[in-house]
Length: 327
Image (cartoon, rainbow, N blue to C red; front, side):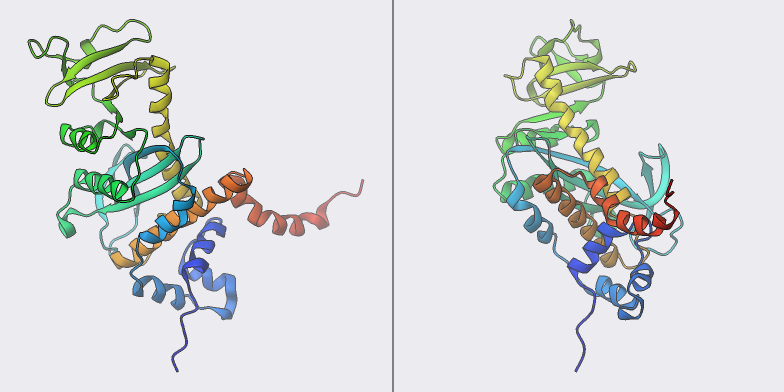
């Protein structure tokens, strides 16, 4: 009789949560010795077709009224020559071209300040003929199918096309989006068009304009402490208070925190198997690992970085105890 595989979803996810720097299948073998070989997680990752519904099952009980943010990130694979779906793509981390797998990601930020990873799609146009904007629209449809009604859908300027804005508005939802400085707006119903950077803002002013190709919006100007200028727009025509506008817009930063945590804490980039399906399974497990970190934080208030460090502190304490000074 064939023995069941020794690797499982829970074992692999908890391994990703616990490992400090090495996330390979070989490391699992080193952790367990002869109890489990590296072939077991390798076979499990290669042989499974895990559903992303597993992530939803983890987070659904903890969803509260909040924000849906969508962006993309690059899971860098700089030394990979034979991993499926790896391509030379733009890396925001390096501000240049790098090798990796691009993900279009989504996060749900509860109004109380907690966030949960919501969904991700691999950008591989040669495989499925979908653009990043197609994946953006798929994520909106997924959120709608789950009966979610975000306070605001948030994105950066790359995803602020009129088609995306109209898709959000068609669902009856509100958005807050950053836009490029040269987006055209009018103050006088299409008689003259100017770029948003040429609007004359007083301090903390929110201006109602028409966005070319879309319609009525509010726009505000944010000047950071380092002097950087950003322009934000919304279809919520009641959001005329500048400080409230900026407060809501800052929720989009949660998705950057998610990307950092996935890479630093959950080994998102640290799978070396060649098959695209194995990479997808590994990345889904990374998202589930982060979801479990966040759910624990909701329960006991201990942040994910502290939780990760707490796993190895007893071993460090035991190792260092002989060196404690008795003086």
